[in-house]
Image (cartoon, protein in one colour):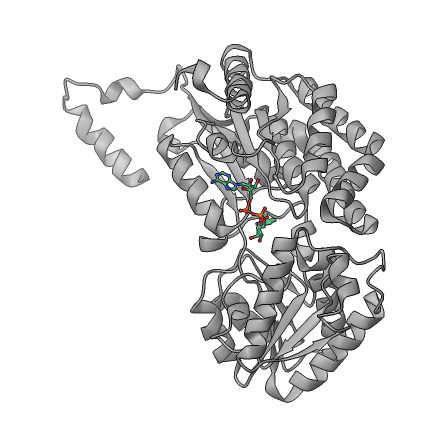
Length: 477
Ligand code: NAD
């Protein structure tokens, strides 16, 4: 498109991209010291502005529990930076790779190199963590990084843009595309790598846009994460852990337990224990500062619709207060609600819930549970509670998911040495720690030939000696 016909937002996007491309192609890759310096500045920026960031996120949500922002966003990022600073010299070093005997005495090395310019598209639910955690990996790998936060977090996005601009050269790290209507153009830029975190629906659109440029993608998507309470589980303990994980950020967590399978004979007891734990954690006062609001009226209405549909199709509900209570609605707080008697025809069992509604699916045989999971999209997370190792291992072996926590929820995500990423409809690729560093690097194989190797014996004209060499190669292969 003619530059003069573009909106100021699109021109700014293009300029930001070209500045970074130019720098990535013309400057040598940043040395270890420069990368450590960038990450250390990011760490300082986070600590110095913790309260402002927390307040901006809360303004976007209507109310976001401050402890949740600290634990799930700020401290998470601080831990990721600390881990990266410590390990980066090792990750950056060329890796020794074995050399087959016939090439001796040569050397193989795997050389990590920055890809160039990495784009990051983030959702609204953990806006700080999901913009910066991929950025940490991408910067550590020596890339230039452009971040596009969600349009649903305008206070946070404006603040992040201001802070990054004050602390980083835009050729290294920049926040852009926070204006309406720029998302598509952002995804269409020919990045060297694009990280998208968001819904599976938009993930498909982004993958298509990236595909046109042959841009490799990391897609961190959503979906329905099943939770299985085995007959061998401690019901009360499971209910308490599931209640916490479901209600963190009012259920607006990609890896929240979406629905729970409970043995038929324990379903009622489990529901009442869950209800008791939910009440104990969050009480009945909508103004409780520990409980987070739903991000927008539209999202609130979607949750009301899911509940209405489930009730109309025969489900029963157990809420910590009346779901129609106007005092809750006024604060956009959605009362924690257990849905019993859920069935496959209900919308609540078909789409990702992403809110504090928890359907319980009673089951008879654990085989039925495995069949149900395998008949649906590969989930981002799966949780299993119990003490029967054979039952646990059968679920682990026969289901495929992005990650699993046994006897709790969410915690596999917090393991810095483990990869984060979905599978199938829940995502492509991985990040966190060294997995992110590798995803955002070209791991370039380099072969250093030895002057003493007799490769020359292979060259034509092929005389009598080639038969001997062939024999040797056959022996070694
Ligand atoms: P979303 O897909 O609506 O939006 C995500 C981002 O995509 C936003 O920045 C948005 O502006 C951008 N976007 C929208 N349309 C676009 C287009 N056509 N081209 C390019 N970009 C576009 O998701 P959301 O509502 O912000 O977040 C909730 C979803 O994200 C849930 O499904 C949740 O499970 C998922 N999620 C996944 C993870 C994970 O790590 N796997 C983490 C958090 C959230």
